[in-house]
Length: 195
Image 1 (cartoon, rainbow, N blue to C red):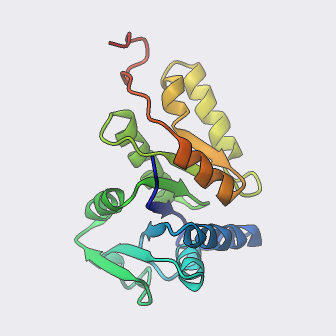
Image 2 (tube, rainbow, N blue to C red):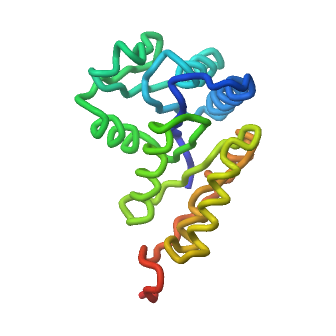
């Protein structure tokens, strides 16, 4: 699969560790260097604004998708290549998924997790064959990935569905992994025989 665009899910705040800001800058720059369009939630605040600004400053193309109801609270970014205003969160997520060839989650809160898990579920169910990744920053996702491994061990998620979620501390390595990823066609339900 050759990537042309990557959706980034991330916080509308910057978090407490300056490393989160640095990771967002590094990811935005890496996307621009590879000529990958950044698709994201359209906000000008928090890590959302930082990753967008970094990509733009490095000459990248950035498309933001923001619901009308959040345009003011998330302060819709007016300096993007394109800002699309949509009716609500469902429309936002559907449009971001439509425009993207892969998905990356930077550190974030409930919205970031919800977006990541929804698009991961879509992949598990076969609605898309696009890769997903976590950009690990100072162990932010370590407890989550340990829990996901536990869920596999308990028989609720198949191993290859768990493997759909790549993780790296390096934006470049993560983008390489996403570019090389190949979807596995298999049943969702644990215990069901393929074919």
